[in-house]
Amino acid sequence: MRVILQRVSQASVRIDTEIIGQIDAGLMLLVGVGPDDQREDIDYLVRKITRMRIFADDQGRLNRSILDIEGAILSISQFTLYADTKKGNRPSFTQAAAPDLANQRYQEFNQALMATGLTVETGQFGADMQVSLVNDGPVTISLDSKAP
Image 1: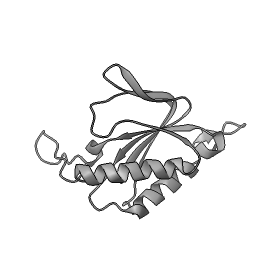
Image 2 (image 1 turned 180 degrees about the vertical axis):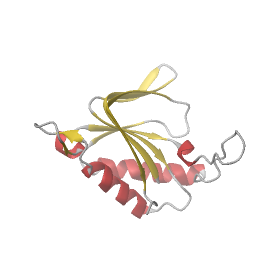
Image 3 (image 1 turned 120 degrees about the vertical axis):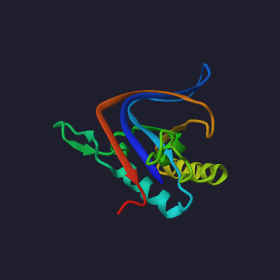
């Protein structure tokens, strides 16, 4: 699985004119699923995301996690994280999981995040969504459960 994590002061996702997910301070996650991703990949990423110390403490140092600040998460499915751009000008997405498997893993991932006690808002899998965010910092981190 691949996740682009962004620390945000606010984020929202809408379909047409309806806001379907919205958070204040916390993390906005773009989540891509590969064909070989299993429960171990979900567990690894949930552990990394919830424990990553990227929020400022009282001295301004990045020593607090999303759990420490009791922040929220906005999780958005994003198959384009598996784009292969090596040939030509049109990206290939054949490295992404098939939609049924990707949706299943995405839902499992969100449930695992919710099980930590965090507030988790989501987009709608497979929908054409408009995402708005204010990146705080900016802090943007790329995570890959298969990376060495």
